[in-house]
Image (cartoon, rainbow, N blue to C red; front, side):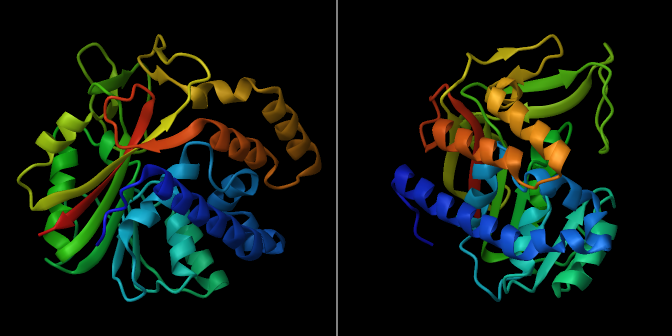
Length: 309
């Protein structure tokens, strides 16, 4: 496992993986638009307009890039977005387990298993109590999960991953990041996962990790941190907190772009796929970059590569 030193080299690799996912979508997923069972799935309805939104466009390919995958790897997906599982499962990574805390994805992936000719193991469980034996996986990845688990749940989840990983196994996790640790507690919100409510009625939504917190919080649980890469963006407007306690940054301003409004209108009228995605893609190339500088005020997400020793 050799760490890629140059951030521009990493970004180049990530963009290449992004293109591979796009080709996969165009050649494998999109033709299924005429298959009724696939067309009616929740995931396909989302992917029809944008298989990866502006935020995921770097996050998902970066996750794959950091995993150092091998075809025989036994892989566990405990992510929220599920596109990577379908991509990997239909590209030769047949030993993959897909999971979530709720079963909203199960029906879709039973259909995909039949239509795309792969047979993942599909499980529903709380990832702070993973129902697999010690040292049973080579790779685990988690996109957009740890930040939402209240209290010390993110550490408990990481401990479970450390338990089920084989020696030298890799755990890649992504979550929101900033130069200073913070938490977002929202008013009058319900989530499909179990969360925590404060006395003032606000509901825990997510953490925004900083590097000091990452290194201290996940210490002494069986991992070494092999790499931390931050997804950053040149800001459209200076980030700020809204009245609900959420940090507003580029993704919250994209819908104001006239190009996105026009493409979304055309997509709704003509039912053409990928039109909003073209705008998101242009904006990602324009604004996104990668850095290892934890003091860069433009960082928005972190991708952390843990190695089990």
